[in-house]
Amino acid sequence: MRKELLPGEQVITITRQQARSLFFPVLAFVIVPALAAYACAWVVKGNAQRLAPFITVEWTPWLMGTAVVLAAWLLIAYSVKRIVRWRSIRYILTSRRILAKYGMFRRRDWQVSLMAVRNVGIHQSLLQRALHSGNISLDTGHSGTAVLADVPEAGKFRGFILDAMDELPQGEVFEGEVLGDFEELPWELREGGRDER
Image (cartoon, rainbow, N blue to C red):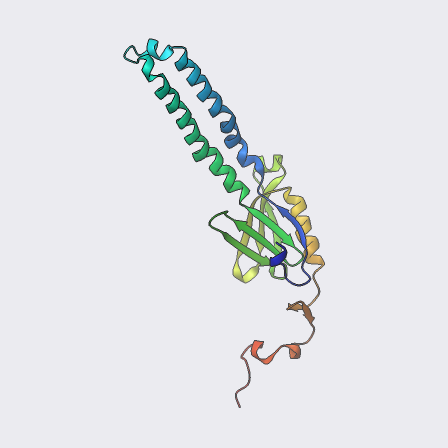
């Protein structure tokens, strides 16, 4: 993150989405291996031969292997996939910007300048309220609204955003300096450019 900071910019906080989305993947990570071990023990005890008489003792390694492979596939396809997805989302608040980064292998991100934010709102479901999380919307006026989904301690995070907005220098910011007068802008950056003579 240090390489991505602007001159004079400081990181205030970094967070991830609320970890409640990991409840079922972690539960599956515990239950699936237990069920696979139970299935392997059930096959070893000869219960498969009692259930289906055509199954012989030679099938035991194949049945056990099938149970292990099926459990591994479920863990990778469901639990690990969701844990990696949760781990790859970060919300970063700096003294000048809010950044949202998504993805580990395929990266997607966006950023909003604190100078552009006009309103900071929190939207919470009943479950989010109970867990102190929420969706934070950043109204930027002309360009629309950006949403940080399922932020933990949403009230505190919004407070950090508002405090950072209060500490911004008054006036327009251009390359780290406060401009008090339109005449200080280079001619190329003024609206309409250089006068034609």
